[in-house]
Image (cartoon, rainbow, N blue to C red; front, side, top):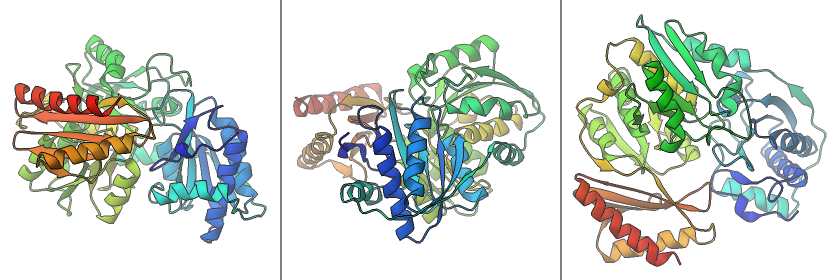
Length: 454
């Protein structure tokens, strides 16, 4: 099978199993990663995999490639991505590979990898793997294999970190048949005063009920219905590998992650020393407004969990997040993105107040925003289209931010167009202070994109 260069994306490797990824490609990626580790003077690495049907065979061949490069492998088996991240600290192995395609369709799979046990590799470190394979720049050796079961330690990490109040709550949690199905019941069953209502908690790589992406509102339809049906206080959903969260309030309304971040910041702003909040360019201005009200300096950064995680450590941010559902707690947690832990932090807040989720957002400024919109293009053309959008905005003398794609800033709204790092798509989001202005901004950029995409 020919190695598809387009699989090597900005912060991971993703492709279709049987077309882009097979046993040989998995082995070669293992050889390249193991060789790069050995050149860095490392001797050991972690490997875990999600519940996709192709993951076990990919893992087997990846591990074969790594040990033949002279690196010892600790195999975690079937785990969520946050469980794998916790392994960095628990076993003091500061590097690894997680086999997952996160929220991509079931036929996809991929690799998230780290050389430092702090954040996933991105940019040149990803592209370098491709070069290492093409040039066959491999080391040789005979690494050992160790097996570890991290489940008990991980459950203890999460449950010991949460301090629930006396209020009794009913919470619906939707695993979407993804990898959180292997662990969520064990965690929610340990929460005092919480009546947990499970939804789609059978591990099934075909994702028969809905796509495991809780930040797309269509995928929350069943969760919303169950919240209303059971008169629950909260609904939470998790993505395919467990590192993202989606939230539904007691009225059955989706709470977007930038608003979830407001709830968290209102709880922690006076408990943290570093008064700075990190968020990505897709977040609404309502988050920036609320941070300023709380005396927190807003810091806008590019999208991508590898970038956000790296910046959260570099800047010692106590809490960071992205509109896509990745949130990073560093106030009293190791700092990686964990959908279940993010849900527990909201449950903790609710259990210590008489307010409902919707009431925790009272007093925020009003903006009209679209959801994150996607436009199918090709991996070959998406960056060129974004460059042309940038040219257009410069000719119109718009104020722009170009840290990730192009975000045009107006006095009464904004428009962002960026290339997706996980697929052949453009992603857009529009916002304004009035519905009429939102319509104007969206129409302007939709017409522009129509003229550029032929």
